[in-house]
Amino acid sequence: MIEDQRAFCLVYPSDFRLTDKEKSSICYLSFPDSHSGCLGDTQFSFRIRQCGGQRSPWHDDRHYDTGAPVSLQREPAHYFGYVYFRQVKDSSVKRGYFQKSLVLVSRLPFVRLFQALLSLIAPEYFDKLAPCLEAVCNEIDQWPAPMPGQTLNLPVMGVILQVRIPSRVDKPESSAPKQCGHENLLPAPVVLSSVHELDLFRCFQPVLAHVQTLWELMLLGEPLVVLAPSPAMSSEMVLALTRCLHPLKFCCDYRPYFTIHDSEFREFTTRTQAPPNVVLGVTNPFFIKMLQHWPHILRVGEPRMSGDLPKQVKLKKPSRLKTLDTKPGLYTAYTAHLHRDKALLKRLLKGLQKKRPSDMQTALLRRHLLELTQSFIIPLEHYMTSLMPLQKSIMPWKTPPQIRPFRQDDFLCSLEHAGPQLTCILKGDWLGLYRRFFKSPHFDGWYRQRHKEMVQKLEALHLEAICEANIEAWMKDKSEVEIVDLVLKLREKLVWAQGHQLPVKEATLQRAQLYIETIIGSLPKDLQAVLCPP
Figure 1 (cartoon, one colour):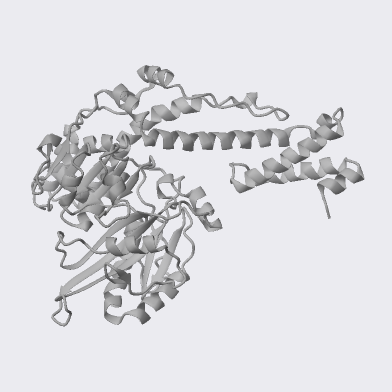
Figure 2 (cartoon, rainbow, N blue to C red):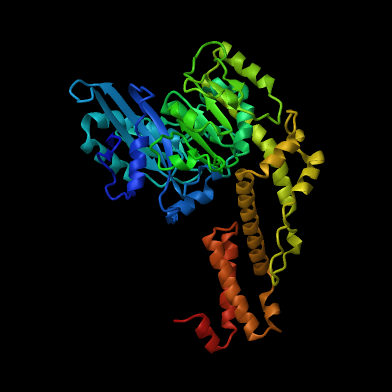
């Protein structure tokens, strides 16, 4: 808990270790800057770089990350901060206002869950202070670890939050599974439909006309500044932008709320090098002056909810971005590769006029973005699959064949018969979009992930081939050196399979262990002693 921008008031658990630099960043980012004028209660989020680079994950981290969608895995080198800030007039305080922030720090991007949790804890804490927070932390400490695919009941302050942790085997287009176990729970649980999904329609209301342009900018990893009236708007807009690529993992840096006090301020504002691949959410108009050299700046105003489509920000040339009172707009020289989907805008406008619920509008918008991303990624997936060696070429006693290299020209040639036009009605310069995508951090991130998965699949198939082979027949004409070499390689494969949790059946692992014991049992006693020391 933080009372001002200089120091922590309380930290739970007390043994949670942060560097002085991390503490300073959290303190400054936990308060809206003076331009926001936030009165009452407000919630927002931030993301900071961890000092000292990545830290080794706990065992539970690996178990969770193996089953979680790539976009929801724990952050190895960043912390998320979820803030509940209160500012109310108070004549008894020197500055005339009561100001406090309760901050939850996590490596998990569960914005919906943690905001719901803070909305329960913070109001009570601001009244009752430390004893309340200690009791809550003791309750949270008893929660089960997040397990992908499981529905969890999380008790806190007399309320039960029920959530389902997404799994990587979930179908992206499916709706959230029905919650279960209500009948035996007292009190009845508060069911959260998602741990992470935002109200996309509300976030994107002022930029609906440019959603596809923004989707392209995110896909290409372009630097973008979001200037909003409040930390709540800036953080929601940045998170919505990073999540519009689902199920593709967002591989660039992003800061939902960023201030001039941030330790990376100079790094991001320097003019001596090209802007980094980062999406910045800011509220201080001073950033317009500091970041005029950035290629894309989105300024949004306060949303106006009515029966008509809210006033849309206009596309404007960056040269018009000169003053601190710059009007709302998307300032960019970028020309979209794909044509705008006018039918989508008409459907959303019709929904507003008919007062269609926001969750239905969000579902419509999310499906559109999902289908757009899938149409773009499916040809890449098909081509990548074609680079995998055939299963019949995997021999038990030979090194597995290599995955063939990704050749961009070959892929682009394949688009004529297997391109996005098969699944997407949008016209435009798809080839040009792919060419720019190849230069982006997202292609590198996607390729590395897919290549890693294919290597693991190859290793799993090779281990299965060894376990299905006749080991006794192979050993008949082999020297002791060759047999010992096989034992060492099999052991190495077994450790690798278990450590990296390869897609191998438990029966295959058991058979591999039995093979090792059988082979060692056939060797002379002196070699057995070397391979199996007491």
